[in-house]
Length: 171
Image 1 (tube, helix red, strand yellow):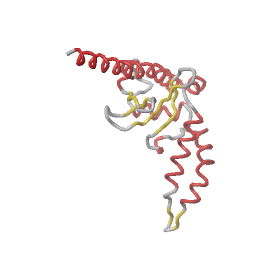
Image 2 (cartoon, one colour; image 1 turned 45 degrees about the vertical axis):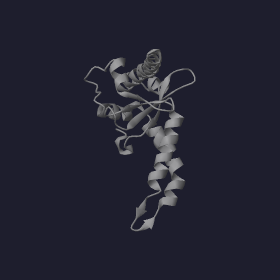
Image 3 (cartoon, helix red, strand yellow; image 1 turned 120 degrees about the vertical axis):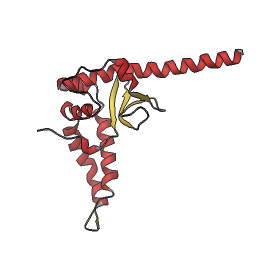
Image 4 (cartoon, helix red, strand yellow; image 1 turned 180 degrees about the vertical axis):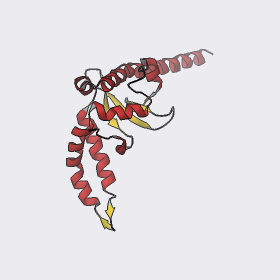
């Protein structure tokens, strides 16, 4: 009986830690959503790990272009070579509040609605085995936005696993 109570206590403590981490991350995700909504580039940049995001976009572009074929001609090797430069250019153009506003809108957040509080945001976050958290469209769905805790303790957007075609520059 005592072992069972100790085990239940430990499980409760672990669950509280996981929830606490998501709640902590939700505060920074909320701040990112405010920056996106307001088009505040400085606040947005403070909540984004630009280098990690650019590296992830480069990796994804390399993977996707490695399968590129036009009229039976395999352009994959060319795509792999060009992907880092394309990702650098694309990263600078794509990693901005206006582009990620579209992603936020896909989650149901728009300028004409109040942003949800941190508890509601925490409910949309999922703890990852490596200590990061991610946002999903559905409760048990795949990760779309990845957040990593920085050395100074702030959670920053560090990855995007959604459809790259959803990142569009509005002119």
